[in-house]
Image (cartoon, rainbow, N blue to C red; front, side, top):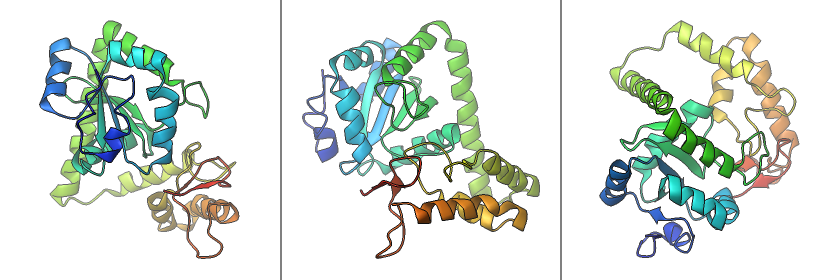
Length: 259
């Protein structure tokens, strides 16, 4: 049963007629996951999010996909504008897993709320170098049944990483030179020299990564300058008012998206 019909959130109400058995984030849903020993599929978005609507139409309105979700998962839908606390926690997990974030945010959790896999938009068929969402659901469901040990290990490792990062952020400790160098090296290694930027479409301007590398020695400046040049030559750049759109819907920075 879809339990979003009595929600006060305009975003959740947009999903009230989905065949997915959506829950809000509440004690009932979390208890149900523990009692039934099922993983949680957590979907976070907001009303004006274009790709949230795309994934909803392609997957959450699809009877076959919904049947897989309902059989194997406790499905929870969250409006990030109403619950920025939940959004913040699991966005950190998605960024740690994929090196980029965005919405819709799609996160798989153990019943004790430890994230073990996640991403943003997943297509109904394999494309954008991503698996089809139904295939992903079935794969995670199979792993939950047959490879629980590795799922628990992945959840524990990611939780430890996030706790360590949170501790460093509040402890006042300085980031070591080695950590800075490793971060710069990793960003350079994962840079998309063909199209510019990081990751595949939809491509987001990684402002923090660009600023960080620009502050490095001149040997580290080729990637951010290349990224800025690619972005400025594409349709994502506003030639009238200046600045950039929120992200590009394609790999070449040609087609901007406006939220």
